[in-house]
Length: 71
Image 1 (cartoon, one colour):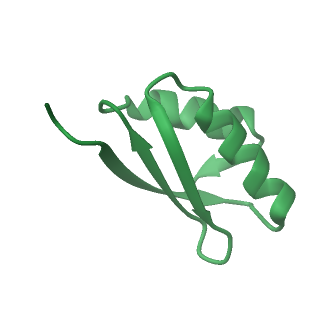
Image 2: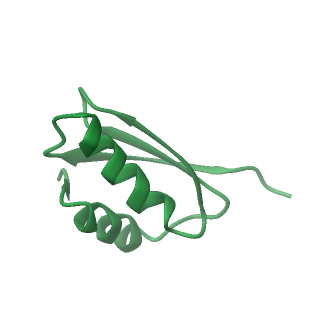
Protein backbone atom coordinates (compact mmCIF):
# COMPACT_ATOMS: atom_id res chain seq x y z
CA UNK A 1 0.00 0.00 0.00
CA UNK A 2 1.31 3.43 -0.87
CA UNK A 3 0.85 6.62 1.07
CA UNK A 4 -0.80 9.82 -0.05
CA UNK A 5 0.49 11.77 -3.02
CA UNK A 6 1.43 15.43 -2.51
CA UNK A 7 1.64 17.95 -5.32
CA UNK A 8 2.39 21.66 -5.07
CA UNK A 9 0.90 24.28 -7.37
CA UNK A 10 0.89 28.06 -7.53
CA UNK A 11 -2.38 29.89 -8.14
CA UNK A 12 -2.51 33.53 -9.21
CA UNK A 13 -5.22 36.04 -8.42
CA UNK A 14 -6.23 34.98 -4.90
CA UNK A 15 -6.63 37.96 -2.57
CA UNK A 16 -8.82 36.86 0.35
CA UNK A 17 -10.26 34.03 2.39
CA UNK A 18 -13.16 33.64 -0.04
CA UNK A 19 -10.64 33.02 -2.83
CA UNK A 20 -8.98 30.31 -0.74
CA UNK A 21 -12.36 28.71 0.02
CA UNK A 22 -13.36 28.70 -3.67
CA UNK A 23 -10.14 27.06 -4.82
CA UNK A 24 -10.26 24.54 -1.96
CA UNK A 25 -13.88 23.60 -2.70
CA UNK A 26 -13.25 23.02 -6.40
CA UNK A 27 -10.11 20.96 -5.78
CA UNK A 28 -11.88 18.80 -3.18
CA UNK A 29 -14.46 17.93 -5.86
CA UNK A 30 -11.76 15.88 -7.62
CA UNK A 31 -12.41 12.30 -6.40
CA UNK A 32 -8.76 11.47 -5.62
CA UNK A 33 -8.15 14.67 -3.65
CA UNK A 34 -8.33 14.17 0.12
CA UNK A 35 -6.96 17.50 1.39
CA UNK A 36 -6.00 20.96 0.16
CA UNK A 37 -3.74 23.44 1.96
CA UNK A 38 -3.66 26.97 0.51
CA UNK A 39 -1.21 29.70 1.55
CA UNK A 40 -2.86 32.95 0.47
CA UNK A 41 0.22 35.16 0.66
CA UNK A 42 2.33 33.04 -1.70
CA UNK A 43 -0.46 31.48 -3.74
CA UNK A 44 0.96 28.05 -2.96
CA UNK A 45 -1.52 25.19 -2.99
CA UNK A 46 -0.56 21.74 -1.69
CA UNK A 47 -2.90 19.00 -2.85
CA UNK A 48 -2.98 15.67 -1.00
CA UNK A 49 -4.50 12.83 -3.00
CA UNK A 50 -4.95 9.08 -2.79
CA UNK A 51 -3.45 8.72 -6.28
CA UNK A 52 -1.67 11.06 -8.69
CA UNK A 53 -4.04 13.65 -10.19
CA UNK A 54 -3.71 14.73 -13.81
CA UNK A 55 -2.47 18.32 -14.10
CA UNK A 56 -5.39 19.07 -16.43
CA UNK A 57 -7.83 18.19 -13.63
CA UNK A 58 -6.06 20.55 -11.23
CA UNK A 59 -6.06 23.32 -13.82
CA UNK A 60 -9.75 22.78 -14.62
CA UNK A 61 -10.70 22.98 -10.93
CA UNK A 62 -8.68 26.16 -10.39
CA UNK A 63 -10.19 27.70 -13.53
CA UNK A 64 -13.70 26.75 -12.38
CA UNK A 65 -12.99 28.62 -9.13
CA UNK A 66 -12.13 31.70 -11.21
CA UNK A 67 -8.34 31.67 -10.91
CA UNK A 68 -5.35 30.46 -12.90
CA UNK A 69 -2.31 28.34 -12.28
CA UNK A 70 0.77 30.53 -12.24
CA UNK A 71 3.19 29.62 -15.01
